[in-house]
Length: 309
Image 1 (cartoon, rainbow, N blue to C red):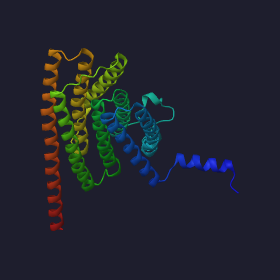
Image 2: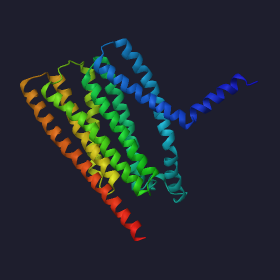
Image 3: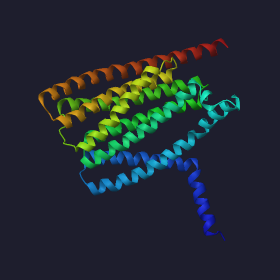
């Protein structure tokens, strides 16, 4: 007979290290719940249903974050252990370089995704509280952006020496980014011609504008530091730049909600919306065309090598 304590220990061990199939199912359910929350925030005005769905979403997302950290923990441990072995035992930790340039980049990508997840949860919360389609659609944008980042990071970590796989990931992420930004450009068009006139509480505007400003600053700093010729990292850099433009639009809609739809604010709204729209179209077109050209060149060179051999 299995005792109650043994059953509890089995459940705890399964929660700590679930099977791969369970992780896939949990991830799928998490994103399904998030998308459901976003759709409810956009189209429905039922606060009770919104609260129930959001509660489940938060629960699923918290465990999803645990699974995500658990998956990348081995990489972080490898980074630290490999560096500590090469340092003198008596050397102060603060004076030793535990992480090289590449390691810090990977950690910054992971931290960026974690902050993006928190930001999306805040967006969904405000979207549900105020039944705001603006917060709902921005949530969908950032959620899909997170998925593309995860895809690229997996390409960098797991297929570092597989150029053919990296090229495929580059092309797929570019196509996903194209679809994603078609949606956001349509939404920016909506913002230009139908400004957000929902009145939010001051505490909501303060919290949201603070988080958005922090996000804006971190993106600017990260863009300044990124100098690389690696295709996947270049796409990450361009995605961050697109996020920078979208963040500017979000700040603008927040300002419009705070100051009201005055004539000067509406003119500013049209100007920012138009500039961001054109910039995103040019940038996404550039990413897609360059990815296709690089993919075609790589396949051509590969065929030439096979013929020569």
